[in-house]
Structure formats: C-alpha cells, structure tokens
Image: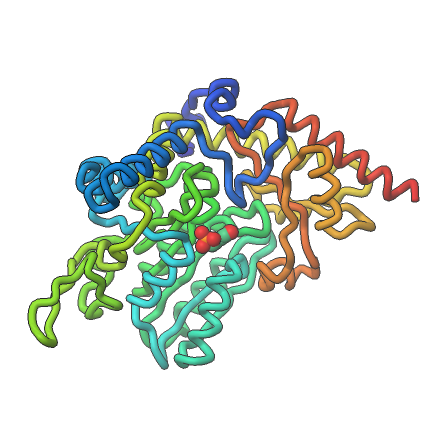
Length: 414
Ligand SMILES: Cc1ncc(COP(=O)(O)O)c(C=O)c1O
C-alpha cells in the first residue's frame, strides 16, 4: 500500500474492505477448521481446484499434448496474469514447480564463480542459504551475510559497506519476508543500493507475493522469485520468477532446454532471450492453470486491500498473543506482515502446534534448522508460526487465542 503526502497532510489511500464471508464461501477448507498456515500452503479457492480438475479431465480425454494445444491461450494468460499482478511484461516471467527451482535456475544462469560475491540477509531460507554455502564451498564464491540493525531488518549501512568491499560480479540474494518471522525486509532500499553499486538483486518473495502489494518496477529488482501455494493461494508444485529483460544478456545461457532453445546444428543452438530460457518443457499444465486462476483472484480482490487486511489481522493477533501469560511473541520489531511467531514458556513449539491441532487449529512449528542465520542466531530452537489469510474470521481468531491461553495456563499449573 502506498502512503503519500498531499500538501502537509499524510494521505493514506482508502482501500476496499475484504469480504471475508465471500472468501470463506469460495474456500471449502475454511470451514470445520481454523486454518492458520498460509505461510506453509494456504487454502485454495474452489475455482482454482476446478481449473485443475477440468484440465486433468481434458488430458484424460484428449491426451496431454493435445489438451495443452487446446489451452494455448489460457496458458499464455497465466503469464499475463503474473505481469498484471506484479508488474513487468508477460515475457519477463518464467514458471517452475517451486520457488527453490526458480531461485536455482536464476542463480545458475548468473554463472557466479571464484572471485565473485553473493551478499545475503540473515533472513535467508534454508534452501537458498545452503545453496549459497555450497557456492562458497565448491565454486569459490565469496559469501557475505549482512548483520541486522536494531529493528531486526537488514542493516543498510552494513549492506552498503559489503557492496563497496565486494569483488568480482556481485549478486544480492534479498528476502522480502522470511519463513521464520513476520519481518518485512526493506527490499526497495536494498535494490536501490544494489543498483548504485552495480550489483544484481534477486528477491526471494516466496512469503510476500499474494500477501503484500508488490510492483517489481517500483521495487527495482532484477529478479523476483516466488511460489504458488503460499499467500497466492495457488496449488502445490508451482512457482515462478520475474526476470527483468536484459539481466542475462551476455552470460551465454544455462542448461538449455527444448522449451527455450533451438538446436540449430551438430554443436550449435540458440536460446530464447526471454525468461522462458529458464523453463523446462515438462510441467503440470493443470497446476499452472490453477495458478493462473489464483493470480487473477488475487488481482480482483486487490492487493492493497489484501495487504491492509492481513497486516491488520496479524497485528491484532500479535497484540492478543503478547497479552497471554507465558506467551512470548518472537517477531522482530520490523514485523508488519501476516506471519506471526511466538513461543510458550516451558514447551517446545512442536508440542504447541500439536496441542493446537487437537482443537482443529492449524499452525506450524518452524525449527532453527530452517533459518539458522535468524532463529539460530537469536538462540531460538523453534517458534510456533501462525499465518492468516482472507478466509480467516473472528471465530478463527478466538479459537486460536482461546486454545493458546489454555495451553499456556496448563503449563503454568504444572
Ligand atoms: C522465504 C522462503 N523462501 C523460499 C522458500 C522455498 O519455497 P519452495 O518450497 O516453493 O521452494 C520458502 C518456503 O517455505 C520460504 O519461506
């Protein structure tokens, strides 16, 4: 949501309210449970599921290739829907089966080697952190992990110093929102510093797409990678990347595939200059069409409205959880996102999640092993993570808070 100054007054644009009842009506999983795991995999709408089942039936009747041919326009529409939601052009999007495969493809195609530098935040996700550590160990890439400032977000002065000292080609592996807390990193400022120092910035937006109002052009990133199943409410097995036109120019291409390459002679080939060069031919067309529906539903609902609603709902949860005896909210100060993390004194997070599940409240325990540079560095073995979406109502909130209060009271009474 963009907040601007008009005259002397701070103007917050009015955003439409979210129709929670309508979202629940089109989300079968919203009834019967209190589902707070959008940051794991959120609940799909009926239309997302229908699009997938419809295509699977078409494949069963017509054959997989023939079904895809019948749906060429619809598949192209998924690229258009991604650009409509996030900015950029359809040709700047490539689709994968997860955020991790997207990040791998982007980083592999950047071809970093000995003497080059990757700069990373403490909020890095396990798969990307281990990938960068492997690049350091096996390829001689210099890896710099930037410290946090007082708010828990990346220290921008430290980033600037790291950029100034970096050698070779420099890539910032930025994170928008981590797996391990509600932190929102200052990605626009990170990208701006990257540009100033001639670095390429790749943003891991796995937890922010579908949750925050994002415009890749306003962020100023070179690439942005996300998954379909989390706040976007798409199906599992989907992910995609925005790759600014020209970012890979001169790098020669990586892992050419029939999807984005032409084999022109015995030892010759050409590659599609667009983001498509990162894709593989084989993919689940059904899942991709489901993702297209989720992208359009997010845009129709409105991302400014969604962001404002989710951030507000989560802020209420954080306040109410903090007021319960024995509960410690674990989010850093810079946490205006819809991921809420906490611990209960005397219990490990897995026990808390299991106890919540008995009351049909779905949360998840995030172990330090998923975020060593964050949770590990903060001395937290694990945290309970709750992540609401637009289908969560007041009853869900009351069920969560009521059960957490009971669990905390049971520990105190021991
Ligand atoms: C911040 C962040 N980045 C990347 C990933 C990996 O996403 P995927 O499982 O789609 O590869 C996750 C998954 O939880 C994540 O939270």
